[in-house]
Length: 88
Image (cartoon, one colour):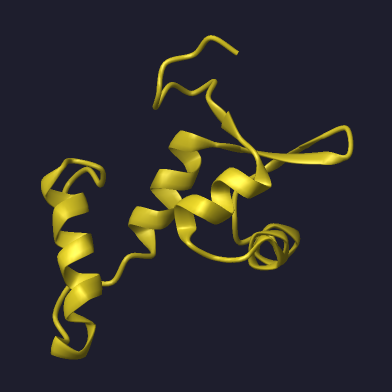
């Protein structure tokens, strides 16, 4: 597929989503089958829109407030500063 990163046509595999979210394949499947993670089934394989995945992650990213999550907060702050989540 010859699409540019972030275009609506860019589709990701389960392995790519798991790597981006830093979770297991089982977690991706579980979130998908529960309807929590936006996905489409093409044949026997699940595919995920990069834009829909980024929106999902931005909606569920907590505000960086708790010191116990300092490392996570830095990551979130960097993502917000980089414009990955609009309106933040």
